[in-house]
Length: 136
Image (cartoon, rainbow, N blue to C red; front, side, top):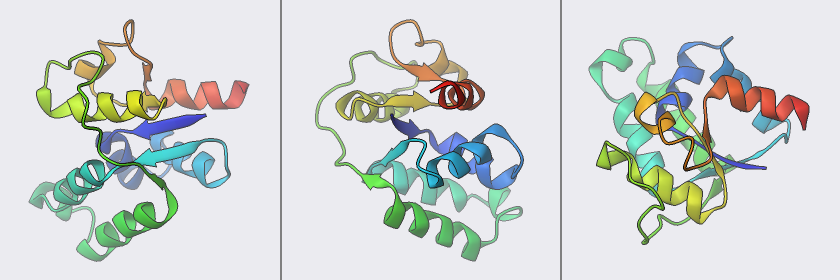
């Protein structure tokens, strides 16, 4: 199974080491699924981890190590040129939909605007994805 984890899921994994997002990183490390990232996703993650609100909770060195680890360990796919099969209410999220579609992956997000598309696109919450992995 292939999955694109939204930046909000990746950040939640750092902030809450016992939550569902953190469990997904452990499952990925154990080989339960293939994590797909792209240059745009990694850039958004690095940018978000630099926000002062997050910098207070995640030191710069830890943030940099996390991005470097994902860059080295996840499957890096090119940023798609094509439009996503469905449009998000926030156009800034369309690249995630296009990436997941292009890579034939499930999109895992905590973003309610993206989750509203679940009837039209394979997108699930981190908790739901953990359940899917445990039943596979």
